[in-house]
Image (cartoon, rainbow, N blue to C red):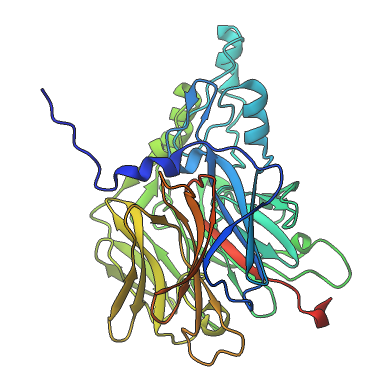
Amino acid sequence: MARRVEHPAAGYKKIFETVEELNEPIAATISGVIPTWLSGSLLRMGPGLFEVGDQPFHHLFDGQALIHKFDLKDGRVTYYRKFIRTDAYVRAMTENRVVITEFGTAAYPDPCKNIFSRFFTYFKGIEVTDNCLVNIYTIGEDFYAVTETNFITKVDPDSLETLKKVDLSKYVSVNGITAHPHKDPDGTVYNIGNCFGKNMSLAYNIVKIPPAPKDSTDAFEKSQVVVQLPSSERLKPSYIHSFGMTENYFVFVEPPVKINLLKFLSAWSVRGATYMDCFESNETLGEWEEVKKAAMRAPQPEVRRYVLPLDIHRINYSEYSGKMYRFAFGLGLNHFIPDRIMKLNVQTKEMREWREEECYPSEPLFVATPGATDEDDGVLLSVVVKPGADRPGSLLVLDAKTLTEVGRAEVSVNIPVTLHGTYTPAPQPSQL
């Protein structure tokens, strides 16, 4: 008889279970202290629906987009969530099946159609998902939930209602764009995306979206490509997850994880493949890096720090973006399941961690104490799931210096995994 091997993080499956929306915000139970200066909203994105009818979604990035909101005021916290009304979600719920192909789940033609209708459905073109479950960020004063396609979705940060879908490819030459943009202090947004040009030419375009124009025109109308980088392989662009930016330079790394376009186009049209089916890893390629237009070879994937910060919110971003910094915050993984929060001093290599039995935290976001002078003077915010507890979901507040718990806001509902998000301080009286 075969012995069943339990995953070391045995309770983790609860963070991948379908949940329902909430009709109204619910009050959290506070333990410890939520600092009164911590006044604002934490918005997080992640999957919340993991099956439609009798069809499961097969990958973490396929679950339908759920937006979470923790409101903090005067030491009190409320929690609210709603599904984003994307085309992928609305059509799936209407037809009770997967209608648009996701990263790892293929959509098949309507079973009610005859064989000839099904055949021609495959050749109508590839319908790209707008399932914006990965991140949420601001463009001007507006909030957009995003994935890694060319579609982003405007949402109301107060009611969490879905407002409109925006196709970025109508404004700039991109066929997809990352969920991890960078921002200048003036609010200008920079991002990078794949571009499939004429004659199957491939490139990576860094695009610029200006802050909201004073003449009330659409900021997207004034978007532009500021840098174009060629793909090292004509028919195999790399999967691009993020890029780096300083005050004067962009930092681009072309990794060895490739998208085989011929497989993508042929397999999709004939048998309904997924994005994941068309990924390849060229283990002999290494990475091509362009830093100040200098190319070099790099070893296979590893934790690596450049002199330039590479990711948003995992450092004290508002004060140290593009500058020398000491501290980076992130998650520690147990067999690919996040079960700890980490702090790394990139200069001394000293590590700290927060960990609690059977708790699964999300990406920590740093919020500086008002008037802070030290780089790590502030708190970390993380959404923590503790399956099986009376209050399985909570907002955890850690001292960013020591990674000791300051307070916790617990709710009596399960919260599925969240991927990325943003913290927005409440407007000050002088700003109203």
